[in-house]
Length: 256
Length: 366
Image (cartoon, rainbow over all chains, first blue to last red; front, side, top):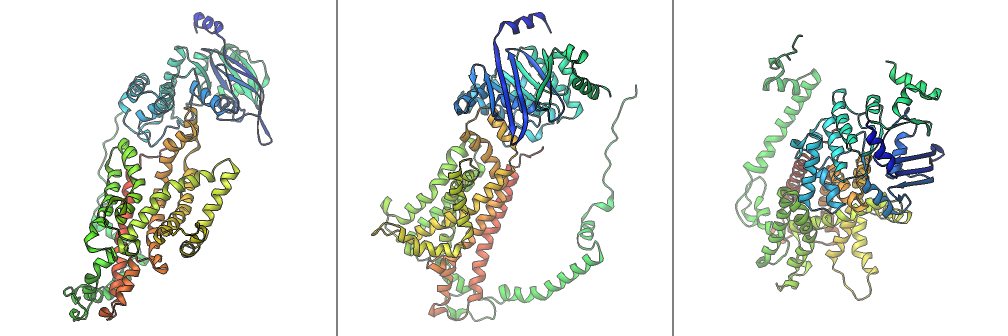
């Protein structure tokens, strides 16, 4: 992490502001009073035990999940019931899922151009050129005319990242992007993500890849039971945990 | 360091491949299996020879009247003499090209939607498909385009079964999709309306629906308007088919993984873009076998129309059987022929369905 990058972050305003966010599934309180500010260009890794609400939290940011109390502002647009606002925010925010969620009936190229053509109303030629550019960046331009089912998991996930990038988002959300991959494919996906981080993309990443966190994160957030328990630089989080909960969590995931 | 070299692949053991082995494994793998095979072979030996004899060897193929049927076997002359009626009903002989044109158009559109490139298919074949029933009505009726007028009283025969079933399913397709969508809607009003529609048309027997269509439906039309009986039947068939297909589609909707909706949402697609571009193609693919099965059912149900006096193929056959020149008891030949024609059509549809399935199968690997 360079000091130049740090300064770049501090100069900019907050791109995501979450205040007093609360969410319930029926009677179950999943997110409790979440407060989080993300600056433009900041790279955040969110970790925590399963069921801690980390996926739910980032899914609130592009309104895949509703919340009942609190406020959420993304790039100056407030998340309210209005469909217009929700669609405006979704255009700014790209998302990569654990299970890739590529559209199985479309070719790789069509997967990539669908959003630009239908949402951004770009001409087909232009959308395809952009798509090929991103496919080259994730190093699979030769797969453009295949269907998702013909690709390996790692390739599919790289396509999913490229699909999000084609919409030129301001923010990228990653929801456990490597959890469904074979061990040999994790690196190729992480490499793409590291490259993206180095280019200054604002990233929120739910992952258990601690190596990745140490390498690229500006801030690591540790969640448990629907709360943000601790947040700090990777150094502080991993070497100097302030709570017994985080200490226990770290010992569970690192000691084997 | 030792270099890892994969072992070369060996051919499969001899005793597990080959025709003889296949027969042994599939027909004589156990005592029970062997007995069943022998029993079936014996049954065939008893049934087949007389059947073949009656159907082909001593059948009457020549001749145009009943008197020509002199041999013991089937009197196919009966079918030959009435074949025009069976296929076209009482449609005027000089105008038969109009029916053929409609059937040809139907086949052409089906082929086009299978061979055309995806972009063309969406832009041309699908709108043509939806317009086809109306174009066919115009051509068959004749008046709007200056051809001689043929009243629906003269439409009939097998071509009517085909065109009616096709016209019903074509309109039922978008309609049932909307109903299925409505049934999944968050809006209680829309949902209950769709549930009532679907359950009504699924729950009431099709014969009762036909009677309602021919007797009750006119009561709802304003006084003085005379809505054609065939048109009413078309509406009833379409609604009946929609009820069934809506449930098929609903199953398809539920089978599309939730992640597909989320991925579409996260790209910022609107509700209709998501539904039409992402969900619908996958729903159709998943539902294709059931849609075809439902269509085969509807197609066969069109023979029920004889009860309300529509001259489709089965009622034409009955008319032929009671014709005073052919009172020799040709029911077996007549009904066999009807069965054969329907079987050929339904079987081809199964073949088409499985070919579409293969084509659409871009693999749903998880």
